[in-house]
Image (cartoon, rainbow, N blue to C red; front, side):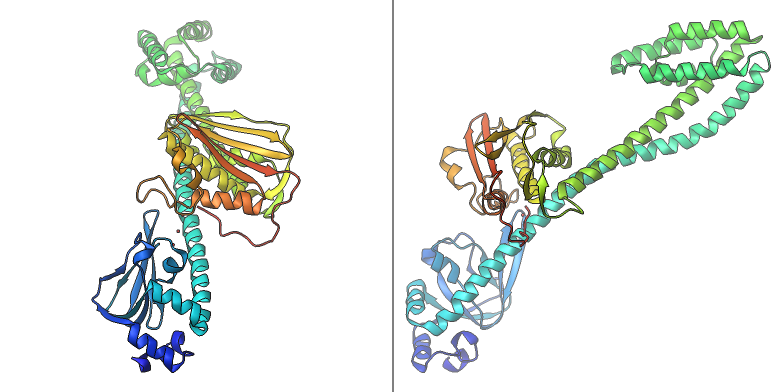
Length: 483
């Protein structure tokens, strides 16, 4: 056993007596593939310190529905973190291949740490590095999980206007082709008896009515379409039901149609066919304009979403700069728009006199994302989201409130702890509020707290206007889920 231990860095500087102590006090055991050494949540009091002598171990941790894995090779050790911190195991370790481990009790390990400096000099730095690596990995995975969530929402938001624009473009192609044919038919039917100015003025009149007409509710639209269709049928217009929806949306009601028929009768020697050609041509013209407007609205929506994302992420801008907190809140709500559409009423109470201040704008937007997203979850997609800003004692106050069931008093003191979550398994990592706390308190020297009772939960963020944020230039591995 002593010769085996000498091969590993952990034991390389130990005296023969210390190695003999390990040989006498260490308990050797074999693990079959899949055998669990310890599992997440095991109390620290039941832990042992393990050294892998042969085989391979795998550490796993469940984070927000995904699993993080780290492997241990011969000579590496595990179990020191729960023993020295007194906290339950944060992960599960199992054998990948047939593995041989050497273990000592928690009490023996603590005694060894006090009396064996060569081993302590290896274990403590390794433990600190593991904790730092674990935190960095957790934050990075949290960031990727949050990015995935936002990307899914943005994909949904972008897909709707993109699909609408594509559909309108396809219809526009067909409508423009038919419009040319209808214009030729109208010219041939009207002949020289109807001056060109008459059609130009008629087109302008119809477009003006379309631009100023009020949008009808579905029931009123249906009633007027039926009335218009009956008028067209009684006037000898074939397939008038196809023209009726566009004419009604443009505000061309039966009163206007009566006026049009009278004007055509006064101008044309063959009024019935001319009326048919005029209405078909007007319908195609109005459809063309409507489709162009739909494409414009779709592209504007896409452009606004892209602008909101750039504003949200402070793309092409310095990480530390003067910000307007309202811009950040608004861009965050646009990015989260897919979650705010159904059943959520947003009430804004903004103090427009708030000054701009120096901050990490993209990181604060992450705080707003975490708080608003949590509020939506708490309300289960239905309720009032209240966002208030104010100038309070040389600080900017941002309050995000919801009317959900509230945070129980007994856990309010723990909600900013890492990995603490009230959500179900796989629904949350417990890192969102921890990261928000670090951004507000550590990075901006501010304060974040919760005031909650059933029907009224308020997360209050106070950011100092005088004290500058921690300008250490070291970017935070920010985000939102990870080991």
